[in-house]
Structures are given as C-alpha cells and as structure tokens.
Length: 496
Image (cartoon, rainbow, N blue to C red; front, side, top):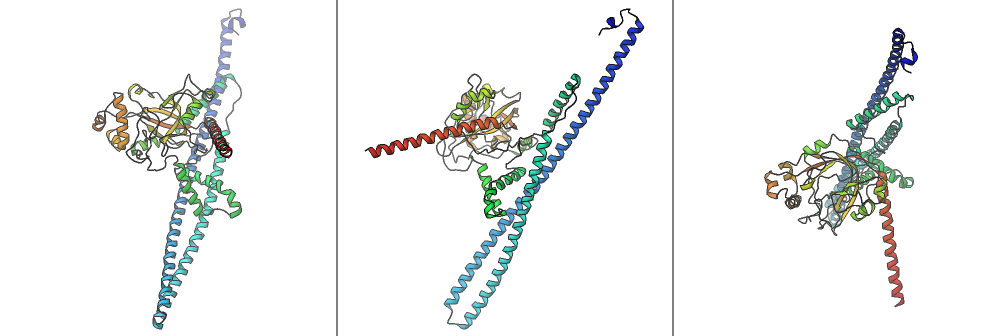
C-alpha cells in the first residue's frame, strides 16, 4: 500500500510515522531471516563435520582391513612353508625306511636307523602341533574378518541414512530463496572438499577397495557356507586373488599380437613390437600425486561386462572409431533418452595412463592439430575404455563412468621417456601426420605431448544397465542363430 493512499492529507508527520513502522517491520523480518539462515548454516556445518568424521572412520577401517589381509597372506605363506617342511620330512621318513630295508642284516645299523626314524617322527609331531596352532590363528583371522565386514555394513547403512536426511525450513518466499542458496553453497563446498556421495560403497583395489572386495567374497560364498561352514582365511585369500585377477580384465597379460580395427588419433596404429600389454607403463609419481587429491568414486556394480564399439554405435550413435565421439544429430534412442551428445572412447594402447576400472582417475593424450583447444574449459562426459582383445585384433569396450575432463600441463621430457617405444612411435606418427611434431622433436623436448586429466565424478547406472541389456539381447540372438544354423545343418545331413 502506498503512502499516498494511507495519508491522503499529505501530513509529513503521519508519513514519517508510517515509513518508520514499515522500516521497523522490514528490519524485524530481515533479522528473522538472518537468524534462520544462521541456523541453516550451522546445521550444514554440522553435517559436513559428521561426513568428515565418517570418512575418517572409514579410512581407519580400510587400514585395519589391509592389515588383516596382510596377516592372512602371511599365515598362508607360513602354512605353505610348513607343508613343504612336512613333505620333506615325509620324504626323509621314506628314505629312512628304505635304508632300514637295505640294512636289516646289520643289527647295529638297524638300531641306529630306528633311532633316527624316531627322532624324525618326533620332529614331525612337533611340526603337526605347529600346523594346528597356525590353523587356530587362521580361524581367529576368519572371525575378525567377519566382525570387520559387519562393522563396514553398519557404516554403509548409517552413511546412506544420513545422506537421505535433508534440512527443511518453513515456506516464506524469501526464506525459500535463502534455503535454496544455502543448499547450493553447501553442495558446492562438499564437492570442493571431495565428499562424493556414491549410490553404494566401493568394491575395488585400493586399501579401502580390498575391504569392499571382502564383502563381495563373503556374499558370493554365503550360499556354499550354509552346507560346508564359513570360509576359512585361506579360502578368503584365494577368493581375493581371484577378484584381483578378474578386476584386471580385460587387461590380462598375453603374448598374442593384436591389430586394432580403426584408424584415429586414439587407435590408428598397430603396436606390434611385443606382447599386447607391452604398451602399459607406470604412471609417474608426480602425476599420481596430483590425482590423490581427488577421491575415487567406485560404484557398486558388476563391471565385468565388456561391449564392442559396434554395440556402442548401435546404442548411442556417432562414429565409433573416434576418441571423442560426437553424436549430436545422430543420436540413437538410448542417447536421446538421456540427452547424451558426446562421449569419450580412448584406446588403452595409445593412452596407457587412462583409468582402467570404474571410479579410478587418469590421463589421456589429446590435443593435436584441431583438437589443441579442446577441454580448456572442463566438461563432464561419459568415458568408455577400449582395450585390444587377445588374438583377433578387435577392441573390448568397458564403461568407466561420468568423468570431469580438463586440460592439464603437457608431458615433460622425463615423462615422455617413461612411455614405451610403441606408444612413443605411434603418437609421433600421428603428430607428424597432423603437422604437430616429429619423433625427434619429442625426443629432444622441443615439442610435448598434450595431456588431459580424467577425474571420475559419477557412474550412470541407468546408462550402464541399458547397454548391458542390449548386449545380453544381442548375445541371445546370436546364440539362437547359431543353434538354428546347427539344427539346419544336422537336418540337411539326415536328408542326405
């Protein structure tokens, strides 16, 4: 209501009084809003503190799990050593028996051999006692592992419950604006601090990931334990070794020579100077240290499924041979459904610093020629990794997650020299074709390999499930077609 309507007489005193009243009301409302905003900020700060405490406790649990794992491995090694000793002792007993049979004619010799055999038997009994003690320790480690799994499950449930709790404030319009602003600031601060909220907890290969693998081992062995009893530490260790070996798939060592099926900056050259994984080299410590400040986002999914580039094109669209696959304008239904216009699909042969499993971080070598300006502004893109398949030269594609892609500093001369010769010559050939450098210029340090940092921020389970469903459907169709073909062949043979 205007002052003129409230005071048609234009009395200055009355106008001043009304303005003062309005000012007082606005000041009171502003004070109330500030107090509510302060309470909201305090609650957000408390939530951050609780999250930090939970993260610290999870790290402690991870360290404990790693220690238990090392203890189990040590016990396993000791058991193997004891087995070797027992085997040696058994061989010694057999040898002594043979000597006794050969020297039965000499009583003195027989007595001496019997004494030796008795001594060996005593030593064997001592070894059996020591072996039984190690088995008891093994059972204790099993019990500790079960307790640790229960504690981790409780922590995961607590964290999920806290994540689902949100702060709500009364519905004043101005207060709603303040609430939204505070929540946005809190979310930005949380992301800056590196607190990534996963849909579920990790299952991979850092010290924390080993604990999560232990959960997986426990769940997969639960069915058999109903009839045979709980798994021993030896069984758990064997399961962990199996998990470690399968988690590297499809990157296993082989001596087969492969030929990639495409020609692009990412996969244009056949690296045929050695085994299929001869291109893999360790990430330099300085780059590894730079990635440690980004927390690993490890999803709770079965990442063993691999796809082909053809399936990727059929599901999403675009040119499946490129490293940066632009699918805007040629989107397939799955890409249209989730508004995907661009994805990354580097080849591990030419980008050995790429992450190799979901949630991990890494780098790729992109920026030659017309791509020199790419990713100077960060982008968030889905990342697929191509890995040469053994023997036939085709590529297996794995989905790693949603990644923040940002240009990093180029490789130094020292970092260039850590790359395998195959990768060096392959990259230099691409650079020479794009007039961006030569092998000699890279070797001398006059030109440098462009580098892009890849940090995982999420894992699109819906996209992954969609690809997996299509993959299984195609596999079933292929199997049915093969069966039909075999049936037709058998029918023709019977007719003949």
